[in-house]
Image 1 (spheres, rainbow, N blue to C red):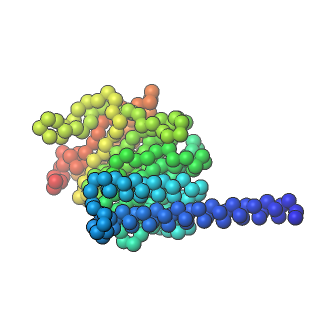
Image 2 (cartoon, helix red, strand yellow):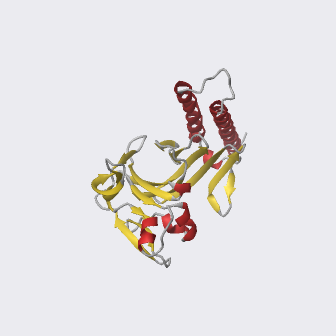
Image 3 (cartoon, rainbow, N blue to C red):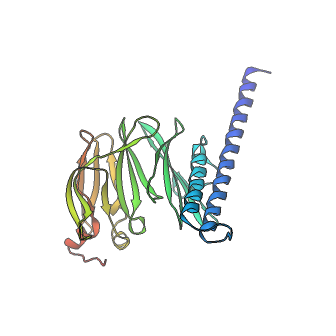
Length: 283
């Protein structure tokens, strides 16, 4: 057999096995998320909905999700649908009970994919380095959506989570690229929204904090341009920025440069900013 023909056969066999692995792990995840939801809704008389069982079956779902993400090129699984007008995003609504999203982010410094699953009971995301096929970030909170991922430099990456009212707020966090799993660092300096002893929200200066929060309600997002809660980063200038809108829908850029592994920037509430400029928002 000619050498070229042999190489083609080996390549096709590899692609076939990879495709089989993708679909097999996806189907296993699909089975586990459905089982977990059935369990929570009390469909198994023999399984009590208690803390022990919930922890046990939550772990099974997350493990199946990670196993699917770890399969090489699973971000290109053909079972997932391409988002309209966005070739970097694939998704699937499963049985009207849960959703699976995969979004790819390319930078001159690296190639990453965010895998997310959402349901009425649990949400989770993780970040995979495509080139090494390693899971480098696992979301630790009940968050399922990531709007963007930016390489700040060759050793740091910023993840922008979607949270708050109808996922209209944004939270930025920075990870240091080190070893197999990246480590989150305190990368922000400035005023932070925190609850005091009276459970009242106030702004407190923090020299080192792990997050930058950009609050925005659903109502504000509907009345103002879509980018009112977007966070941007330019790799060349190393500047993080976002838009602060006034009552006339005019905006000014708020910027902060990435220097000495820190952004000097305050948390911001778009609702309060708009109200102070002449539009009273309902809370």
